[in-house]
Image (cartoon, rainbow, N blue to C red; front, side):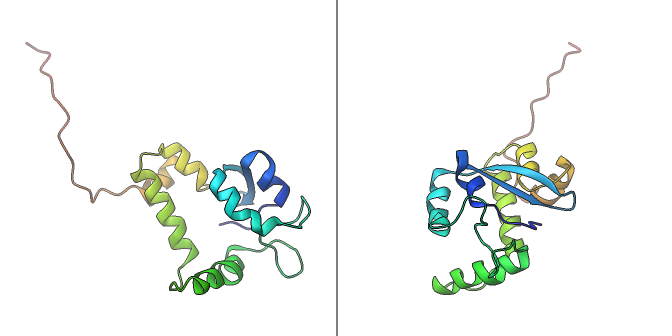
Length: 141
């Protein structure tokens, strides 16, 4: 779970987003695409480098529950979309990253997991039918 949102200076410096979060309170460095930086730039206009991108009304950090209530819900409403759960979006991101071939170690890191096994358990599905069996060679001949 994200317990703090990124300070603006960290978001815009070098295309990296730094977050502090999870049970282990580790700092993670998350790469942002140019498009994502562009989309978030309206959130940072006129703010100082150490300000948060999505602050509380008092300028402090917000937790994921408040991020959902104060940021995500109003955006979805304005777009005419049904309310969505932030946790479900997180799970969808992890699952789609694996499906699109992202290395499981990278998915585990981006999701803030301390082990690859946790990412595997949460985001790898075996519902897709196998395309082919592995080849078997008989080396005894």
